[in-house]
Image 1 (tube, one colour):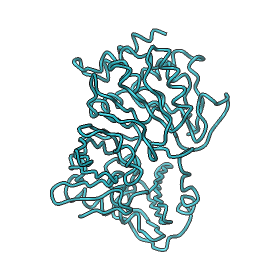
Image 2 (image 1 turned 30 degrees about the vertical axis):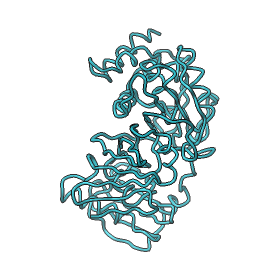
Image 3 (image 1 turned 90 degrees about the vertical axis):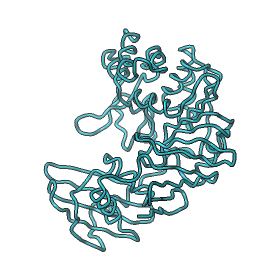
Image 4 (image 1 turned 135 degrees about the vertical axis):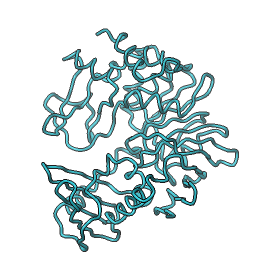
Length: 387
């Protein structure tokens, strides 16, 4: 494989001509970090791809600007057998290179500054950072020992030797760092405290929060507060894993939402929307009603969206194309009603007050967002949104 030519072409696509990250992207053999990955077939099922069996497909995947899923449920592609068809959602991936570069730019690491790469994954960010910065200044952390072991070995084969740490970032982050760049969605509240404690005063963090797609950046002050902003940029990362694996999805509640007549039935005001891919709506819903999971299905002209919450709340909206949907809701909260409040605001004001908002994170992990007359709090236990 002529990987150097492909890596240079990738660098041409994902960096500017004067970017400090250009040479790093061009000099990393990304395919060596992703020898196997999961892909979806036409039926929506997961299929194992092995690079050594098809060098052309391997090169196209590794040097395309795309994320590659490396773990589905509990099964990593490295441990799979041909013919395995795992069920479930992706639980680890190699982040698309353009997003890795954007997160590094938001984090502003530089020579001589200690950097924590939070969420090792396949090792792509650690590779770019180690190539540009001194090895000794880069640390990469993941909760999964296989990911840190595999990435460490593959990076070493490239002559790169960042420190690899296996730890649960929601419990303890060893060391102190001047820059932290996270490619997992960090929780607000108690789960964020260890990461904040690992950032030195004067240091900078770049991360997304929870299930939002908001990229938050900030500088740590001497009193422990982090002050910054929501960047006018978005990213979709997996939630931070805690313990042995991700918590199970609310599959039983989703099954109930799909089939049950609700305690309340109404006609929705707006068309059925795929919340997961409507990033501003998804982010605002997480701010106002944290913890909601969502599923969207489309069969021909028929659309269905389901929302569920750990407290037992659920909603289902169904419609033909853009017709007003029939909405069923149950449980202590009215989730579709909460979503429609956000859509009302979007229609009335033309935008949501998220991108560009001011951010103030206190040492206890509580995140305060504000902009104009709007403010919200994340991590206090309940969504708190001032209309």
